[in-house]
Image 1 (spheres, each protein chain N blue to C red):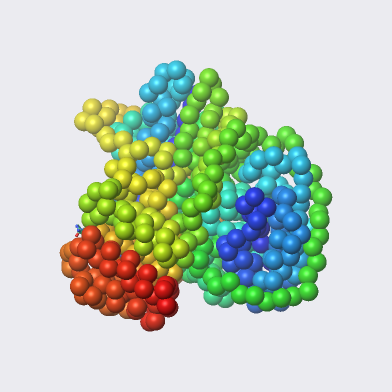
Image 2: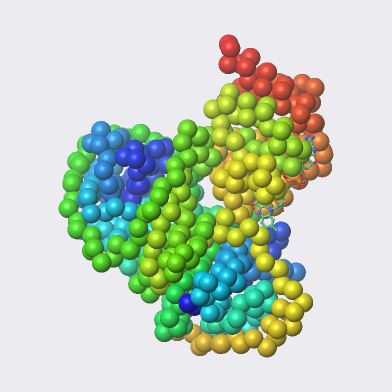
Amino acid sequence: MKILVCISNVPDTTTKVKFVDNSTKIDVNGIQWVINPWDELALTRALELKDDASNGVQTVTVGHVGLISSEPTLRKALAIGADDAIRINIEAGDAYAIAVQLAEAIRNENFDIILCGIESSDHNGSTVGGMLAELLGYPSVTGVSSVKIENGQLVITREIDGGKEIITVPAPFIAVVQKGIAKEPRIAAMRGIMMARTKPIKVVEPQLIDSLTEVINYEMPKPRAACKYVAADDAGQLIVLLQNEAKVI
Amino acid sequence: MSVLVFLENWDGKFKKLSFELVSYASKVAEMLGQPAIALSIGKVDASELEKLAAYGAEKVINIENDSIKAFDEQVYTSMIAEVAQKTGANILVLANNNSGKALAPRLSVRLKAGIASGVSRLPVSINPFVVYKKVYSGKAFANVAIKTEIKIITLAQNSFEVVESSKTFVVEKMNIQPDGKLMKTQVKEVQKQSGKILITDADIVVSGGRGMKSPDNWGPLVELADLLGAATACSRPVSDEGWRSHDEHTGQTGKIIAPNLYFAIGISGATQHLAGVSSSKFIVAINTDKDAPIFEAAQYGIVGDASKVLPKLVEAVKEIKSK
Ligand SMILES: Cc1cc2nc3c(=O)[nH]c(=O)nc-3n(C[C@H](O)[C@H](O)[C@H](O)COP(=O)(O)OP(=O)(O)OC[C@H]3O[C@@H](n4cnc5c(N)ncnc54)[C@H](O)[C@@H]3O)c2cc1C
């Protein structure tokens, strides 16, 4: 069995975002780039599945659309334990363009399980996984909090509004994963970091694809009204304000 | 041409989210001078379908088919795509929850339609078609142009007011046979969370962080929530420690919510926590540290010890309720 984990390269979640060029681009100055938190958990789960030999997972590959500047993030994924990486050599466009690049690059690689995070922390799109599934004609399951292999069968937990479903689905398939998929992201050990240097990153030349959407510009949130304080001794007054002033209770 | 809105049902019922979606779709339809058409798949009573019309749907299409035994993303995509073609839909509206996140991207590829997800307002302009959406987990917003003929929008929950606008409407039963070969998802077991208000649906959410000190201290917080008809939530360390259940975890890696009122009690206000709650209309912070970042996000604050403040809030709510 072969697993692919799709990885997005995003600003660290503590980044204070700023925009430049008439608010059309993020200011990359000083940004620390990391593996998108969901993708990191997906990778962790893929490696856990591989660790248990009875699951029969031979390889865990990471796939990424991006220029050479994102290789440190791919090396990090290799250091955490992925066996190899595929990088499609083009600056990421919109979700559709990314999904098409991924689909074309992996169509003949015969992955059995493809894991994508439920969203990337930059564009909050929640779309690449589903698009990739449709492009490849694979079944997909979205909102997955557990992937297990039981007697060769895939057993998936899908989170739905107000509950969960335990389902089975045949491989090849795509899981769009969320909280629960792994407890903590796996951290690279020294040995992993050394080994990552020689693990293969296959660079694939991109297709000619147009994005279907375009960011016109970015806006910062409107500053909120300053906090109004109520003295702790007089805490009940807060409830009165919420009722009469904010009118929310 | 039409604006087509897909509505999921929960055991044959719709909820506020459904009415937000129909309200939104019918306002977009008005901007374009087109009808809004609601689509429901599964067994739903006529009286429930009629409710959709009260929010501006001119036609309600219902597909009921015994062969659809599970929510299979490919099967649903095929059915919705077929209805979109039959109704000449040029705009599709779905929820930005797990079902919408499952279907919208597949429909995008199927219909060659650009997609903007987590949209929180009516389109900024129609030509070019530009929508406003959250990016960087609420740290910023983007105006996104969708350049294709067909456009897909997923609407952020609790971002759009429900507006009643009764129109004359028709309910149409449509018979679409899903392709059996596509049906690959098999549901083995369903575990429903019963009785509790879902945090994503709640108007008020009362949330506790590490400043609550111990899982034994949650009594007054839960009492406050019960009195307010609110849902309870928590920060990530609290669910990681097992103090509260995982489905209460809000933030970047947990639930993303937008209630009218969010109480952050003993929560420092880390950016990853705010990523899940910054769309709340009002945030109340209760924290011993006057410099905690949560006060920058809050509109109301109390600098004080949660164990002393909470009982006072409970008393005050009881008092206003008794009036
Ligand atoms: C990739 C990533 C993703 C993350 N995702 C999330 C997420 O989804 N959700 C999330 O919550 N966190 C997330 N985190 C963790 C986040 O960075 C913070 O560590 C976390 O939110 C802190 O939780 P807290 O506010 O409960 O605890 P603390 O930061 O420890 O804050 C406790 C607060 O309680 C106050 N306090 C102490 N005693 C009292 C008292 N008696 N009465 C009142 N107040 C008191 C303190 O002053 C302090 O402000 C994530 C981190 C990373 C790196």
